[in-house]
Length: 165
Image (cartoon, rainbow, N blue to C red; front, side, top):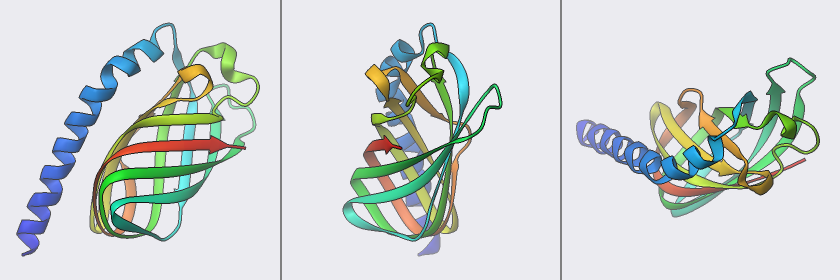
């Protein structure tokens, strides 16, 4: 049964990542034109339970600009609609923030984001989340690497995230 679970999880991750990047690629390319890497967003969350058809989780986040200025604190609420079954103990997500350098002033990341997520955990797990949004849909959040989490979880979902200060 473990091999089946692992195989299904790996398959879902592969399908999710491929579908997600195919869906977001046009929007991502549009949002990235005349844009560059302006910083990194790191978000951390505690225990979380997926409710089969979706879930919602609140994360504490810090944005660090490329210029090394003082980190800015944010709160993010991630809502997933799709398959999200299981539990996670802790989650850390890290994104590269891509935008125009003139948005580096003010509430840069505040706003609504949309995209896709795929993840799987059996004790330790991985996932990927590609999101576009922010001020006038001008910010792209690309996974720097996969998210890290612990627990037992499988998810493939359309994802929305609201970032506030």
